[in-house]
Amino acid sequence: MMENHAPFVADIRIYPIKSLDPVVMDRVEVGKHSFRNDRTFALKTADGKYINGKRTGRVNQLAATYDLANNKVFLSERNHVEKTEFELASHNPALVEFLCDFFGMRLTLVSSNQGDLLDAPISSSITLVSTESFRSILLAFPHLSLDDLRLRFRPNIEIDGVPSFWEDHLFGIPGLGRKFTIGDVAMTGISPRARCNVPPRHPFTGKPASGFMKQIIKSRAELLPKTSDLAAYGHFYHLCVNTFIGLAEEGKIIQVGDELKSLDSVQLSALGISIE
Image (cartoon, rainbow, N blue to C red; front, side, top):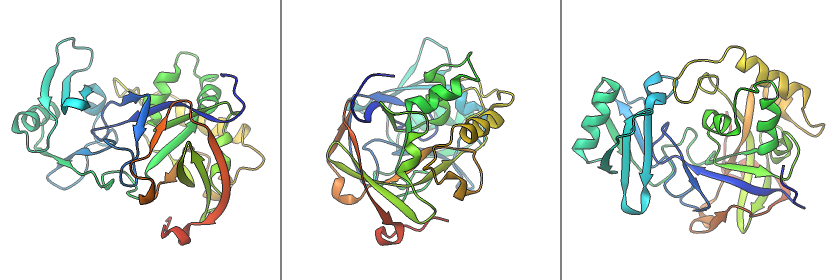
């Protein structure tokens, strides 16, 4: 862990196409309740459901890189050197045809810059985790790496300079949030992120890791901070913090090195947020 006098941003990632590969950023602009270019595109099938890692392992086998400044995406089968370049646009028929062929089904590419393609639109825009939380998990999985865990859990922000699961204090009991700032961006931690069956799978092959879920639960229980309210959420298979960003923050910048400063608690109902 880097030496620092306060929690600070160590890693920033956005995911331009929902469920596909990330872009690692030094700085990111806040959009509407989310980061600019984060989950602005998503793949949907005829039944209106998303294509994601829960639905098909082909997601893990599709490699995606981006040139966002020029609105380009480069796609290929995982580990293939040669990639195909496309304009990143929902109305691009060549891109849609490539994706249909890759997944072996008819689908559409939808887009929105309103933050409504996220798993929990508006109320849970950005996910945050600490580097030491990842490192504590690696003790049980020495064959994995920090980057492997980043790809499995897909956080937007990683905080260093703090102990394992320190981020638990950024949320309260259900219905109670905790305000904080990163740089000059005001945010509210609203709840821990419950995990699904995707993180146990290898991010490039989709092959599940034996005992992965049980070990996450064990690590969370053993290293639970005394001030954590995680037990109020029913189980320990949680990692990362769901956060809310208000519209007043749009256009502001978060960058690597920015400090996180904790503020006061707040009733989520006062923010118009309802957590089920």
